Image 1 (cartoon, rainbow, N blue to C red):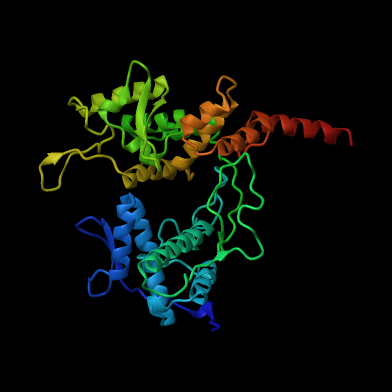
Image 2 (cartoon, rainbow, N blue to C red):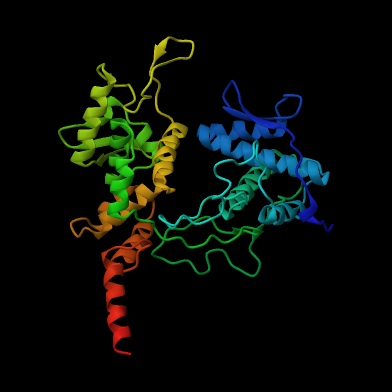
Length: 391
């Protein structure tokens, strides 16, 4: 069947909502009834230690798939590779469904910030979103094929044509799942993005509280991820050894990380601002204002959305679009440039699963290539200027 995918409009069918029970998020139909095939799959995913944030992400991907099946009038258990192919094509050209129209961000959507040289998000589906959608739908149908229900073949096929599994495997690299999903777009090669020192000072100066200064100073000192730093409790701060304990994203393993003395100074100021001693199991990062949400007036743990707002306010003052991941890149590039730290040291601190990821960053720095101006690039430009003067 050949479809005009550009003309297809997804219906606003169903919703993803928090749920009671073992599955924290579910897909509901317009009658507020949980979609049974999705509920059973997500229950299996949770049993395999799927994290709540991942469950929510999977639920939204499956809601999109269900809307797509509604649009093309195909039952979920009758889907074929043609439906998966056409959805991949549609995602490459479609505009995201938004609950409300853009306001302040309308002028910048899809443009490049002149200060950070970073592109603002637009309303198109990114390559990573398409790949995530394909992976979730494939895993969903793999579950139902194991159960013995659903279609006879997985609609999301692997591209193995003319290739033997692991035929060209590098013996220095670990074995990874074999088989690329057929309709996965290739990801553009992205280099780490370092915040120049002057821009970092400007960003730090735009922060409005000691809490925000302590949090960002900690993140830029060791490259900790947002999810990891937000989970730090009072007992996780080792003041004497100048380190903090985090739970690593993915592995969920506990790990002690070094932290700069400057970050600890700001952290002490933040804890003094709270006015009451911090308990060992209390989160270090809390809301600045007390709120009553039905259980009395008190502070609440800082969550990811609130952390994003911290950067949103600072970026609005500076006309920039820095993110927490830029702080991680900055920390990585600073550590790799320090000859006192080995590749293995940097890999351990950053929590990279493979040493090759750290090696790529090291090659960029010591090879004289950086995403933003720095000393290596300055030397390159100076050398090129001298070359041009002789022509």
